[in-house]
Image (cartoon, rainbow over all chains, first blue to last red; front, side, top):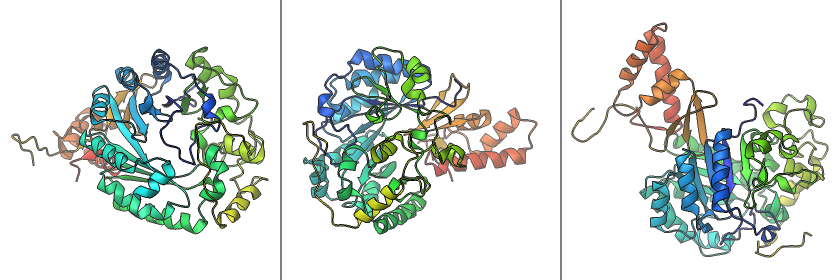
Length: 364
Length: 97
C-alpha cells in the first residue's frame, strides 16, 4: 500500500476512567463494561509498531490519561521514539512536579479542556468541581514553556460565551483555542435535543471566532469547528477512513476512529493478537470504507468524494441504521430530512442533561 | 539587532514547540507542532534549519543562493520571505518582522 493510507497520528486512549462526567462525552455508552486496560508493556510495543508504520504524532488521551499510574513510563518510551506527544487532559489529578517530569521525559504539548468560561457552569457541566484546578494546570503548562491548547466543547448552553472563552484563552496565553462544537454521537446524540444550538447562535459564534482568528494570527490559533448539523457538506471524518489516523482504545482494539467498533458487521482486531502493521494494511475493519469501491450513491459520482469521503460512518449508522450510507449531513442524502428535523427541534426548549455515570445504561 | 552579551538575536527562530524530524518513509523533513505537521521540500527544510535566530532573512537567502546557483537571487529572496511568512502566520516563528 502506498502513502495514500499512512497513519501520521496515533490516538492512544489509555483509559475510559475519568473523574468528570460531561453529558456529551464521546466514550462508549457502555464504557463501564470495559475493564481490561492494556498494560505498560503492551502500550510501549504499540508505540514502537506505530512509529515503524509512519506515525509521528501521538495523542495521549482517554478518559483521563492522568489516571494511568504508568503515564511517565509511556511518555518516556514515546519520547525515545521522537513522537510529538500531546497530552489531552481535563487536568485532574495532576501536580506541577508530575507535569514537569512528563516534560523532561519528552512531552511536547498539553491540551486542557474546560466546559464553560464561567466557573460554576463549567463545574455543573463537568459534574464535579474542577474549573479552578484547570486554570491552575494551564498556568503550570505555560510556566513550563509547553504549548497550551485550550479546548472547549460548544453546545447551546455555552456557545454564547465564545467572546469570554477567547478572552480567557488570551489571558492564559494559550497557543491554540479549539472551539469545537459537540459531535452528535454517543452520549451527545442521546442528549442532542438539549445540546444542539440554534442556527443564529452558530452564526454569531462563528463570526466572533473568525474575527479573533484574524486578530491573533501568528500568536494564537483559533479553531472553530461548526457542528455537522449546520455544515453545507459532511466532514471528511478522520481525514478519511483508515487514511491518516489510528486509534487504539483502552482494551487494545485498533480502530479508524474511536467509535468505529460501535458499527455493526465490522470486525476489529486487538493489538495483543495481531501486529499493528498487519491490522492497518490487511484487516477487514480498516479496509471496509477505504478507497471508492464501497461508496454509495450519490457519493460514487460526486465531485466531492475525495474531499469528504462520504462523511462520517458513525453518523450515517446512528442516524440511518446503515454504516455504508451517505452521511445524512449531505443535502444530497435521501435521509437529509433527519438533519433538518433536528434543526427544527433545536429551536424548542432544551431538556435537562442525562448525566454520564459509571453504570451501564439501557438504551432508550 | 544582534547582541552577543544578552543572546538577543536578529533573525527568525523556530518557536520551541517546533520539532524537525527526518521522515524515513519519504526521506523528507517533517516540521511538527501541536496536532499539526508540514512535509517540507528540500529547500524549505534548508530554510527551516537556518531559523535559529542566528541568521537574518538576508543571511538565509544568501546561504540558499550559494547552494541553488541555478535560481536567480531575486527569486530565492522572494521564496525565502514567502516561506517565512507562512511559518510566521502559523505561529511557528519568533523574531520575524
